[in-house]
Amino acid sequence: MAIYSIETEKIGDYLNSPEFNKLEQYHPAITVAADLDPDLLNISGSLVNIRKVVMNLLSNASESIEGGGNVTISTLNRYVDKPLGGYDSIKSVEYAVLSEPDEGSGIASDDLDRIFEPFYTKKVGQERYRFGAGC
Image (cartoon, rainbow, N blue to C red; front, side):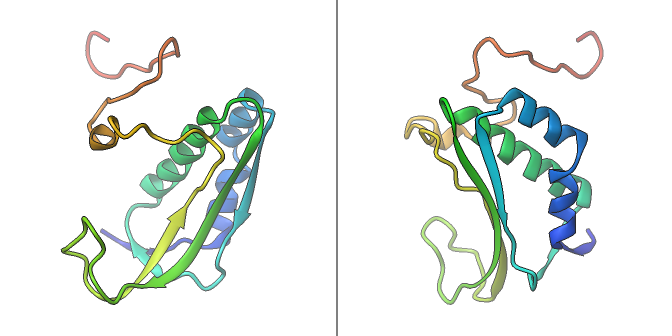
């Protein structure tokens, strides 16, 4: 796995992409703002996957807001000096943090345990993309 810097222009690249323009067309009443730390720490990961994470978070946030509202994508550096609840294996060091708070209704407590299951969704009546043989 390579180590990358998520620079402002990397996220800005997505915010200027055809994919983001399509998201704006689907959700014209949603405003997306960026608050990005220019001195963000490097992370280990794939640029393609980082872009997909940003795209999916923005898409899900936009879909969760009824009517109009705001979504903010932000980055910051954070020092963790003791384990966080539920994350006992995290070391005490500095981390790069990506967050996307929105004005949506949030995730129901019954669904929180399932959100990382592959293909889990609460979306009904939306076009689904199928991959693989025979789909």
